[in-house]
Image (cartoon, rainbow, N blue to C red; front, side):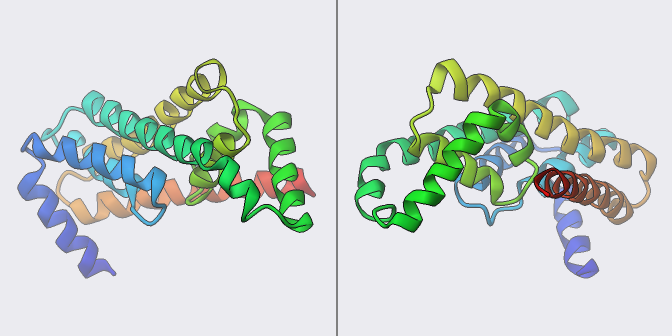
Length: 201
């Protein structure tokens, strides 16, 4: 694992001074919102590390990470919205499936925008929530976009700043900077999940 990370960071060192890395941050943040197998936090953290070491601009890293995430979330919402009638006729036609959909609707109604913010820190959770918002036809401009802008800015800022601080602190070791920042990011995610579980109990 450490060797893979080292190779990745060597690649970062080669390309981090090039403007193309900003596009990488944007693209991966976008795709992660639709296909939750792409490591968007990792990419924004790496961008933050590069910024901390003077190769990128931290404001641009955060802005492009947030913009990519917002566009991806909007695509996931749009997929859910446009496919909602078909999904209701097929996937959600059983009583059990209808119960799950109603439970998701109640959670969205109860927790509102806070659900979008917290789900952004849970891999896979962000896609499930944004799709559910589309399927249940929450208002896009009046509700979804407003809260999702806040969610993506908070998410990109936390990942980028973690990388930036680690990059400044460990200028001589890209690998150490990454593991410190990524470990902190995992800790935040675990804490959010623990609080969510306790609240549910």
